[in-house]
Length: 141
Image 1: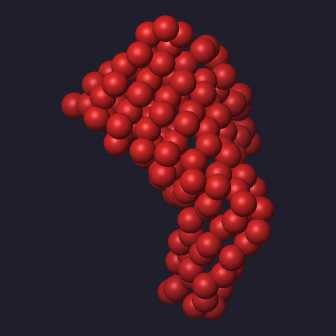
Image 2: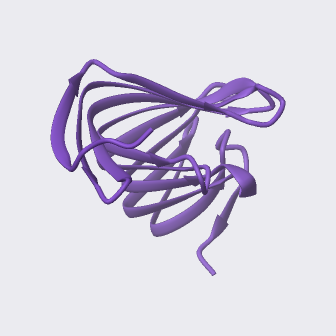
């Protein structure tokens, strides 16, 4: 489908992507989607977003952010503003100015004032790599 060169806004969209087996990879709900189409490419930004990241077809992380976008080709979801993410498999909580989730690598790159909490344990870093469910963490390379 090709759209004419245009700018448009969609109110309360829900976007999601499945893998080859039909399992959900991610799901994003937003107050609005502001998009622009030009030369058969469409780019957009979701605003006031609630999102879920999946592993094996099950949601393992829920997040909220002022802004987000997804790339279906690379299977990446990026969120920014002030992102707050909560694991669905443990009591971990991640706060960051920006996160980039790479589905194929099962990892999140969190940056800009990162705070990761597991119960009483707190870790503050400029940049942090964590798995999708916030169970494993490693420093930036």
